[in-house]
Length: 366
Image (cartoon, rainbow, N blue to C red; front, side):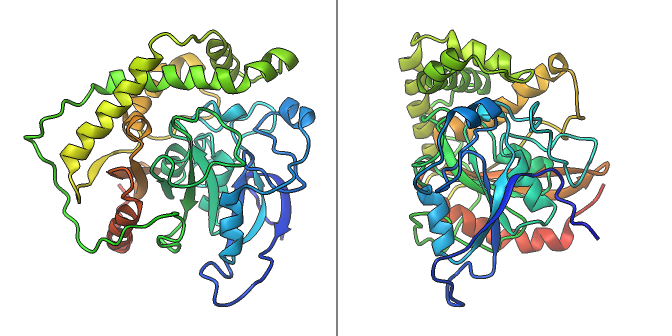
């Protein structure tokens, strides 16, 4: 019987640890890599065939991928992503849309769409993805799996095609809590936690609408800095939605960019004061179930705006966030997210590990 790959992969191959050992922490596990990471001898496609055609094979592998290989896991391929990481839907005009294993008539979420589908369909134990504005958290929620966005800067983005460096993070999509804190570079030793907030904190928190506007403005400006030369040189054919966003980014200026950076600092300080040392913020990952495939872009405007209001909290503050599946509602995956302050990645993963087994035992289906 043929194996169903759910359209998750751009390219299948096997890359194994150079020195396999039963003692390695990830021995026996398999993973997939988003088409945004450099892999020695492979062209990084960035979700677009013109990018693939105009770039040479990488001459080294991204450190984030090497870390996993050295831990004992085997990579089985490169996964489809949204073009130039510029969407949270997961629909790729050129390569097709990976199939959401929980709902074949719904989008898988992006831009780490193939990575999430590969995990949700149990084709791999975990996947590497990136999250700038929500590109791990959204597909994790839509595909009913765990999605971890680390603190900004906690995991090296070297060898990863940049989208907007003020927000870019390397994260992981996981079916079960099997990787512990191995996936973070620096893990603080914390043994106890409280989920609480300090209502009397002195710092004001910017509105969600202001956060979303600030994130999108700075993303456009940095995307332009990173890719304007290539876009104007090759004038690539981009899919619906992506074309409009890239065109908008090409018109971006540095007006209000300093204000955006100030908002980032204000939010980080305000949330750190709110959560203190062992606080955890619980929010919905996304505002609703995954949209149906081929939904008209104009009809998704309000949904995207609400989504970015939620996603911008971790994006702008640089805090770490985990999207946790809660079960099914009307047959579709639902999730909740936990956030902790910048640098508390190990603490947050320990909290999730403590909660996850209980959630799995009582996971409802409404």
